[in-house]
Image (cartoon, rainbow, N blue to C red):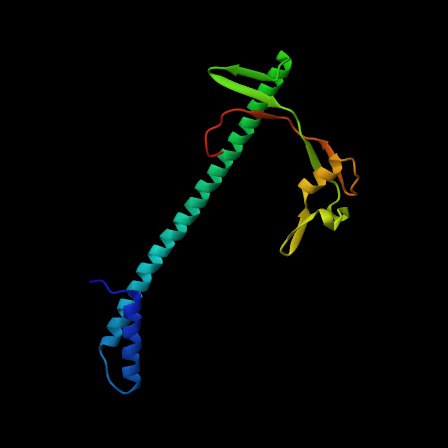
Length: 166
């Protein structure tokens, strides 16, 4: 039965105490050798684990790059569909094999200078704050000026059936 590193350490401490108290123990060199073997075995496992972590990071980086590339491709295709529908003079296609609708652009809040936004429109996050765009949008839509923020037209969007998980 293989002993754990903790068991070996406990035996080393016990034998060391016996040697300190004057007992001669010939098992001490054997325990040290066993401890060294266990430490080297753990080192090999540790080295493999570090290599696996690095390999995992490479896989993650590749996966992130792939996801980013696919997101850019989705954006390009959505733009193509929007432009095509615009050229067709419609904002909707509804067929049995697919349905797509161009959504009108919504007003979006643009923060020009966060430091000028009144505290009433700031969301407090422990140790920081950020502008509350929802509250700002309501006020700005009502025609009330707020220093440091303004409304502008955002991007139009598309509505279509997407795989779950996006």
